Length: 309
Image 1: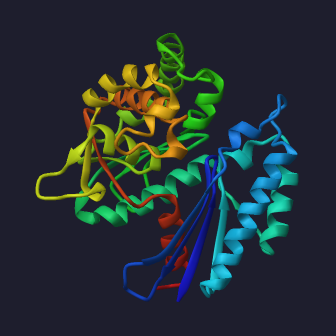
Image 2: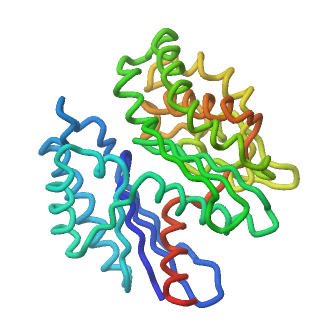
């Protein structure tokens, strides 16, 4: 059976198509991304502008066409924080659903964390034990932890890389003073959430699963012993911290020349690095592993389970 997952996030509209069968691992056949950076399209009242809505509708319509051309039998469409929290979210959702020709599942922050945790659990396997997960999107930071398929604790805080760039780092390059203001804000925002997670058992694996974290791992990380490639990368906090002042001093156009920093991440990567650094610091994490599976795979896996496979 061929399934598609359409993830309408704060930074991109991402279509993942995979072939699935009972008892087997989903095999991805197509991955198609449209970069939007929706935070650029918010007006002073927090509504997505008409230009932004039009860009969303265009990206969704294109994804629907690709899914049809690829003979997708079921398209699972989800939206996360940018659409969820927009002042005109109800209207935007209605227009997306019209373009899709089907209902849209709008995920709350904790639901995002739980779906992503499921994907990471399946990727690492049951023998991984206690997992602590970080996921940084455009609008929010998700944290989840537990030893089972679903986390014992899951939280979402509005510290996404796009949101923090618009609010704290609008200049290019942002400079160290702006970075320090963001760092203090992130520290204060994470503190109450971190207190909850520190009460849980010590993790056997600390994992990061988002595109922002994968990009940072390519910049500052290294492969786990015996492995190669991003699927088994380790990201040390010390190296991440040392890179932040350098990233803040160079313009976005120059950042894309660095290893792992793609053109769609150049503006947001500084904010993503600061938020991740503070999240790791708050929970006493010195190093994390990178998971190639995240929200989209979690949505796909949950649907497969609900089919009884």
